[in-house]
Image (cartoon, rainbow, N blue to C red; front, side):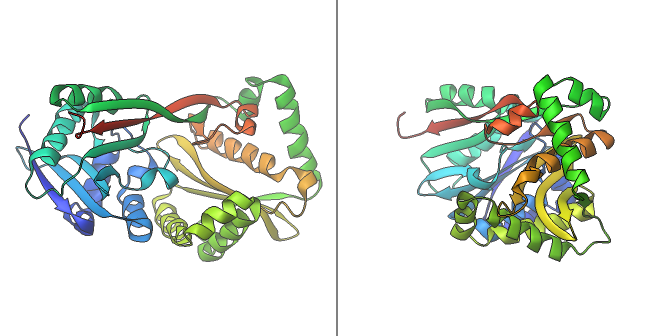
Length: 339
């Protein structure tokens, strides 16, 4: 397959590649998550972007989109757009059968295109272990004489799902199985109900409530939000687009008509993705509402035919108590200046 590339600077990339073409390429790509969609990538850049946006568009000899690599450039370092701080899975957008050729074309374009700003490091964070990029980038580095460092960036615990909720419970530790059942029963007896936001609900109010609960959760979450309040706009815009697309799973526990804990999830490609959470820990601590809501999110995923439940980054103990199994994400760093 013959490939041609062009470098697109700035946010023009979001109009240069139409959303339908972008998402068609991302769907079934080597890393197909909610974070590769046009909506998420554009929303993140418009609210949290920094440095300069540098994108490489790869087309085949029929002028069809074959690959897309969207980077931010800051202080000579290229990283994937959407950044490691907010985004758990990052990669180029390409089908598996074209991954090697597209990565080579992207790399050559970055290295040789006169329109590309100068850079010295390609710092690729949060590449999933199963992505072909993990093996392709070392080969490209070796062929071109670049230095390469590979390290595990973090783990993302995932629960495999099949059968019924009872089947799921039967597959985890007996003690934890009993604990989940006990906590769900206790919360139900106390009058706790589960609310799933749908098309007929007031999404703006729901996001306001979610962001309030997020900031109530821990001092770390409050500080994270205060550092960049525009993170709230990312949640708001992505939630609207995901609701329209049928991929938003925004859930609350409620008690006496008050929302007291929340999970902001996606349902995408047969998987529940737990993006963030909120919990007013100043009240009803005895009801373990985080546990209760997680159990119901797993139940919801099973009822909707999901094959897995992804807690995303972090090795918090509760994830393993629910049966999470570690998957790894990697950081691959290629440097020109040590050739």
